[in-house]
Image (spheres, rainbow, N blue to C red):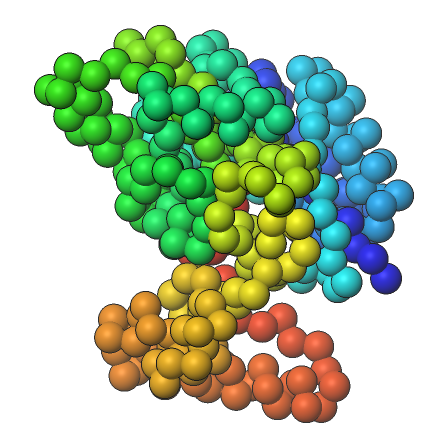
Length: 316
């Protein structure tokens, strides 16, 4: 069975989000949808999976919310369901930056269509910034992009203020172009950057996933694979499942080459985290993996390891 996966978000005024959560959860569950949907006063953010018919009905339901009529999604496919369950969660922000007053509903940068993106970032007067986390950037990014080396999106504001001071010290006032997986982080980042007093700010509409869906791999400026927040872990430029797996000890994506390293033990450790884990942690992870393997050998379902926090954040 082909499973359709829809990555979506929409900034809009959603004052009754708390009272609507249960209703949305029941409707999506009734459609057989699995995945994660975050609801907050500033809008929606999530990745949902199901049959194409069910996904269509789910999106129709979300678009009935006042302000979400133009909600769009980025689509991909998988041979198996990439989620174990459906979660509809209440949040203060649909993507956590932690800067009060930052609201793309009030102030936002210029949207750039995927087909126009390469021209913008090829301009020598443009500074290109990847707003994703370090472990995402490590497996793929746009040619020439700056990696802030942040572990969480909360670190981006401080990083940008230091970066801006450096530009000003050099007498530079370039155009700022930013991108992320599905568009939500770079959209919020442009709101922050414009509030800081910078005018020429742009972001990739629909994010990397929309770009890969729109721009043929031949000749594009994307390099590598794109990290995604589900069981696929990463996707190739043609949106087929990528070559990475997730280390369930630390949440980092692990390449084929890294899996050949003695430091990689499925479910227990990888080259990134081996020296950071205690003996008791490794023993606990090993026992957890043992139970998963035993359940698999018996042909039984197992919920598997709980995703590490960073892989469960879903900052599309």
